[in-house]
Amino acid sequence: MTPDTATVSSNVLGTLTLEKPTVEDGAAMWELVNNSTLDLNSSYKYIMMCEFFAETCVVAKENDKVVGFVTAFIPPERQDVVFVWQIGVDASQRGKGVASKILNELLSREACKDVRYVEATVTPSNNASKSLFRRLAKDYKTDCEILECFSEDLFPGDDHEAELTFRVGPIKK
Image (cartoon, rainbow, N blue to C red; front, side, top):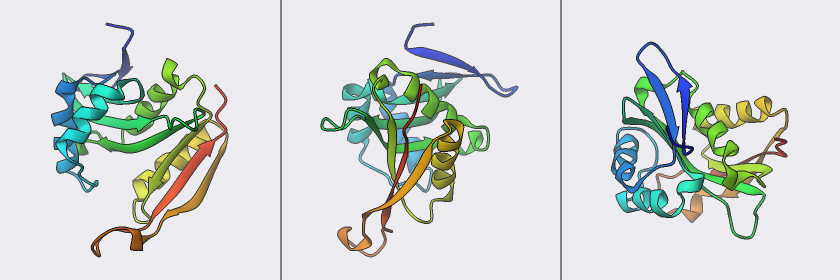
């Protein structure tokens, strides 16, 4: 096992590994999102995140199959923040704490050593993500601030909800 891989005990089906993604993981990340209710970005976005932001992205694999991931980055002007662009977990893994494990792995990375806040935008109807970030705040014994971010009228078409910023922190490591 390389330093870029963490092993987490999983259910009786096997062992979950948490790794830095490679460009070969991008298609599987796209497929996971395509088979979910998450906003589907282009396949290029997932490959690009794996290539240029691997230090702040995590894939969860079971038996070498991608069953979860986070794409994230540290905004250049705010080095104390890691912004979670998207987090996805395969339906077969939901309810097992995989998303929390992925976020904890992200925060343990050397690239996040100066990170004190986790931010993400979440739609009002995304109860799973709202719970995830509130749980992260509870686990780190810190605050979860919810702020207005992008209103519905900014998005083309009529089918995108507003996006709220969930800001968790300060995180003490």
